[in-house]
Image (tube, rainbow, N blue to C red; front, side, top):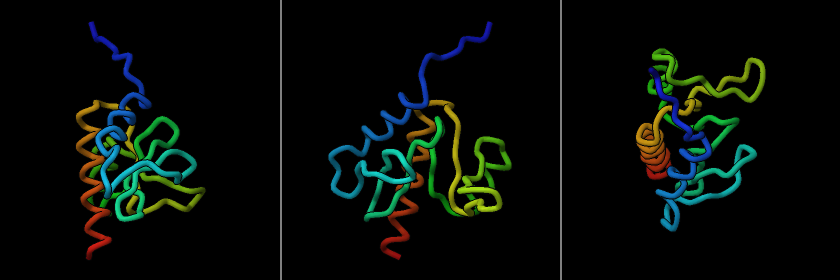
Length: 112
C-alpha cells in the first residue's frame, strides 16, 4: 500500500528558507508575490502556487522539464522564462538540493 506524506509544499519551503535564515548572502525578501530567497540581491528561489520556483541555467531547466520533474515558469501566455522552473512537492531533500543549486548559480551570475 502506497503511503502519502502529510508534508506540504509550505513545509518543504520552510525547510529551504530555514537553511538560509540569518546568512548574510541569502535571506527572505519579497518577490514573485511571495517570500523569496535572494543572494547578492537576486532571487534564486520562491514558493509559487504550491511549487518551488527556481532560477537555474537553461540547460538544467530543460533537463528538469524533459524528466517531468519540473514545469517551465511563465508570467503569462507565450511568456515562458528560459531560466525559471517550478518543481512540485517531492521531498525535502530534493528541494534543499535544488535550492542550493539555484543559489550557487545565481551567486555565480553576480560575480561573473
